[in-house]
Image (tube, rainbow, N blue to C red; front, top):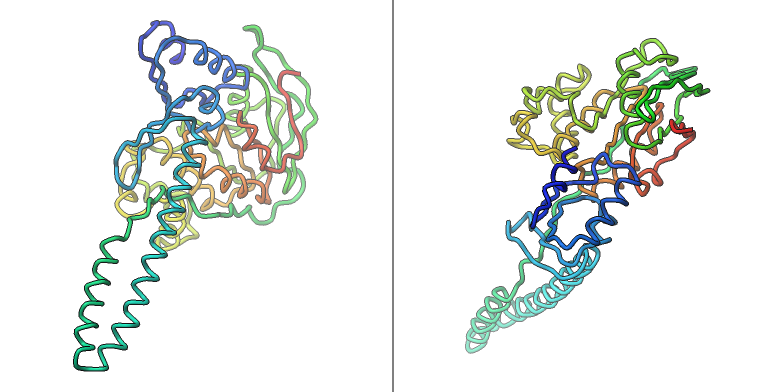
Length: 348
């Protein structure tokens, strides 16, 4: 609806902030085509590199370290390649300077012990070292990627964790009941697919609440729920309160260490959840899953708002998860990195 409101105004300048979030494949294709053929100026923020590269002619890059805006010609992949080449050149030049400095220092040590005029030579060599030092380049630094992590599965899992024999959908503005034969056990991963509006998120939420018709979750199974709007988080809690409230097993030092792996540290631990960026809320949600040690992961669009540098790390953690997973994602490149044992297409 927000996207439609932006487009229907027929603006001269179109500003889109993560417009592909929650869009299915067809929706993204339609939006891409609109931008490609629109005569309007369009500025887009997105973590979907393929989407950006379909239409991008230039990139404004916000350097997280220098806090400067850099302008590039080309698409995102062109920018990444140009930046990588620049960093390589800067590192190579600094390596040459470092070698020159070390050679000069070795000569200084040699001449300084000779006495007499050799000490004057050593003095000049020190001046040369200072000149070398001034030539050093501050190598460009990129924002960090989260550390590899593991989501421990609940101990003692056995038998069927989740069973689904039927589910409800919404199609052509009317409801319908469909049959299914899903039985998820330990170390089995299920993906839900279907177009937007058919009821994927509704099914996930009803599973969490225990109200899903035709579905049953084994007794005492802990559910780890990642909801795309982060409403499973209490926005009035601080990050530290949110993380300590999910576990009684971990000491505060351990909690802080796990949070640091998700780039959550220092003063951020005392910020309210509601004051964080959407990407930071996502990282808090992932840290909570690690601390919770669930037996069943229910994940609704876990790539939304997440920096795509983090996505391979998250995908690896989900791929290796030993509990049961129910996943909804519209990002094929992300899903391809996760072992999927069964697919439930709500549109069939």
